[in-house]
Length: 527
Image (cartoon, rainbow, N blue to C red):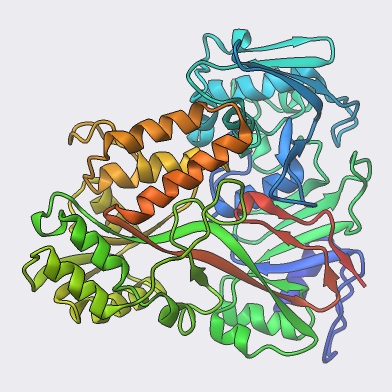
């Protein structure tokens, strides 16, 4: 504990942690967090693609439109005060609000163009989210134009404006301060090296210190247009061991611990509280259609009744996952939250018998060799065996399992999927679309990876929903699409991930939405 206190002091935070106290209180205007943050590769929003990097970016940058802390289910204006949509011309014109970056520089339409052009030109990992709009280095200045206090964004392709707005609410669409960034350009990198350890945004916080695998420190932007945060500083301390996080939390040296195990969570008591937050990742069992025994739809249907959903979520998955059986996570417009399937061995046997399926069926099941994946696999192995479907569990590292999946070399697979950005099409394309099932047409979708030649009806529904301009009707189309996939697909969606965060009971206002991009510290107070 003394080593941790010394490290905190080394960050120049001036956090007066009472040595020797049974419960050491952190400062009233600072939020101190214990979290495993060693996944961070980059913090530049043009490059950042990891979970923790997304969380930090959301607190440093604004976008034209964004999902705000007050209601993470509603897309609202960020730096854009309002906007006008022209579906026919495939364009949206945004009027910027009168505000400044944290540097004091005004937010200009030119900064928006610079930010988008920078992502396209650098072409780093998340760039595809913007370039899918038809943007290229050659045409970006024609696709994004400025006029006075407005910015007009254009796109190519049959996309509804609602889809485009969700793209513009994604992480790489963060708006950066051109003047500040270009002060730090080195060898034509457009400030990339500097932005990986600094920030140039207009968000509620400013990145004031970052040491990889040690800590991230953010300070309040006192001039934030929605009001300055109550927390003058947020310190996210890298603590890899869950046991150490628990010790720091219970002794009062941190206000929040984000990576505790279910057993540790269950052992906490006042003055600690635990909040649960549904996450966007859905977990599924899938069958490769290159395996003849797994191609009959009766096998898919029976499988839906052989998963012990309640047994798992009420035991070893308690607090980590909840039952969810549709491809779009609940908590966002367009989700389908009905869960019609439950464990029913006799029904599963009847389905297989009536379809003339010969059992036993011997199947290999690839799984990531860590909890809770191995525990889920063992539960599936036990329940499916009762109906004559015998899983041979094949554990591997995450890289090994995913590589095998991408090569379509598995038989059955236990994995999870999270959207790249918060639009239903991100998952609809993955679970309900596959117009070319050939081996040489690689697609980063669950449908292609499971060699499922999706029926033409579902392909058409997916593309129609993508192009539908009416938001309410578009959501209804995604609900219908999820119902159809839920009823007949070689991909059995079982759970939606849930995150449990333990925190001091005086912490209020913390927001943890369905993805790391929806983690907000702006509203946090400590009574």
